Image 1 (cartoon, one colour):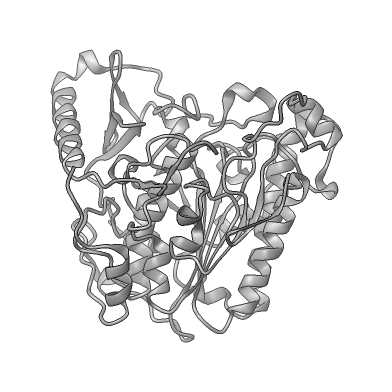
Image 2: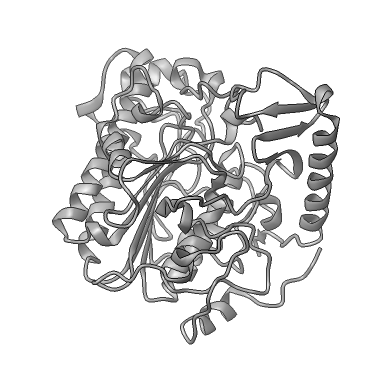
Length: 464
């Protein structure tokens, strides 16, 4: 394991003293060299990160029955990304990747963290919040954290000024002897079988958390944060607890039929998005704020009507098929991101750290490997802009299972699978036997990258 001699503390001490140009291979272009200078100073950033939402579970991504007028309008006014990936198909690794710009094994968060675990995101990692806070940003995390519940791992130890939310998944801390049937819990609005804490900063303020109010209270916290910081640059990270099971909504969105629980949950999240966008307008910062909407991984198909749909993609959560990691993603920034734009280039959550850093005029630590790339040219919709990723990698735990290069995707598990995603988005037709040269080339790329990553692994945070 390679030791890192430059810590988060070193970064925070020096980041405010200088800024450096982030020239990322594969992202050259005028837009990258000259990030936008908003009239009110540095741009604001909001990342809305849902939990277990499927690729099809937004109207503009093809949902046949879920109404998402606010997300659809967000796409009309901004850009829809059709080939945008999370870096894992489960919760904790996906969140670590988004915040650090690294594939999960590089930062040693490779599994779902449970309340019994004594590890978390290493406080020496440099997160998006760290990068932006060093530039004078107000930073807040509102929602599900799931990168370690002990004090040294919480958001306030990882660059966030404040935190309001639950520290891990809402189906954890099950109460022995309580009926955890999902249909019953929904119909009776009974969250008591899950003794999940609600926290403000490092303190538990409610236990069990009233899960029927979480989406509403997260929205209220987000609105308050925006209004309180409208005169300075801010970064809001809003990782919703839902639609991870068990599903709960406010009374306004409740329907007795448990088969409509998932639909109701997404529709309340959509309403939350609408209120946040309206708050930005009323606060006068709408045109100076980039809003990103995406999901941490694919839908939990095994939960049937309590889970979503990844169609037309294959499979869902827990897998490295497209349905597990390709996410419905929308970005909006009036006057910067062109309206009604569709981007089909490969990019993902690991790209948010370097991209937001560049737009804020910040630097990223140069002592460590950052896997993400600057995707501002893709967001701008520049003619001919291409993905900065020659290859994108699909990890499951510590194991590299697949790679995508252009239209080709190779999976190496119990068998060799090759798919042409341009013509076979559903991964139904394995053409490995027909293209041995492509299999060989992608297999080489996989092995080469995995060797490099394993030589540059950084340790997780450990309880002391």
